[in-house]
Image (cartoon, one colour):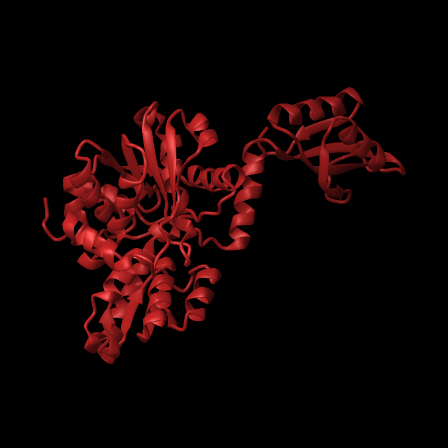
Amino acid sequence: MPESVTLEDVRAAADRLRGAIVATPFLHSHTLSRIAGAELWLKFENLQFTSSFKERGALNKLLRLSAAERQRGVIAMSAGNHAQSVAYHAGRLGVPALIVMPRFTPFVKVTHTQSYGAEVVLYGDTVDEAAGRAREIEAERNLVFVHPYDDADVIAGQGTLALEMLEGGPALDALVAPIGGGGLLAGVAIAAKALRPELALYGVQSEGYPSAYAALHGVPLPAPAPTIAEGIAVQTPGRLTLPILRALIEDVLLVNEDALERAVSLLANIEKTIVEGAGGAGLAATLAHPEIFRGKRVGLILCGGNIDSRLLASVLMRDLVREGRLARLRIEIRDSPGALADAARIAAENGGNIVDVEHHRVFAHVNIKSANLDLAVETRDAAHMQAILRAFESAGYAARLLDGDHA
């Protein structure tokens, strides 16, 4: 077991951070537990001031700087949450901060980082490319580098989260956290294993960025793929974090994009809490790997809530489609007055809510006296959608679900 960070370091960090960060709620979710077949407890780190657990590690690092280092100023690279955390707490402490972020970082994260007073440089398409530029600027301006995960003070700060979960909550059987560079799970694992050696620890990664999984299992790393969990889209786990993970965790679980989107939607609809893709990774893993967690008491870390509002809207709408609660029906109607009204009547009488309508005449392969009518219809569930489809057919209409819709 690497000795870079100890339980004593984590406890010292907790003392340092007390009063400067939120001791976030750790609550049981009755409904999600029923869905997962396990007793799920949620750590709401999305309720930190900057909506992310990253404040813990960033502030611990800043508080450990010497007076001379604070005067020089700090630099960090981040896809958003570490950036906001460094910017916010550096601003509070009067420390100049410069943050390098990938060019395609969600606007909300860039805007918030700037609003805390940090200088922001957008560079590269990935965190790794941004990191390269940050190291160049570090040397050019003689700044202090605040790494998002590969730093002992940052790891110790993140570990304070586990103290709150294990000392203020129920006895857990398993704890699940997302992995990007590994700082969160490394810190949590150090504290958790010291307090509860029997506790099973699991990391979660997107199938599109399985860097820690590949490193721990000795398999080739696939080409990166787009992911909603950009906060953990890191191509190389940390030099300090990887040995800790190798020594202390059970495994890294992979989840696909559908699972991540579903988790974000479930947390919004059931818990009324907003998480980003990485924040939903733990729930996604418990639902995607039920054989591991069934019947156990599981702690999930909702690590962040900084999701672009447009992306969140798309996730919620796509989940309606996935569940069969929103679908498009194509109906062949007479191209004559009253036909649209009759179609609307059938949908309404059978409990469907029409949210969008499109007529197709010129480009439709139908009789010249007819038209294709596409209705986007909201229903209770997939069975209800099928009932509405049958009602149209019973009324004499040729009707079908459009390809790609779920019902």
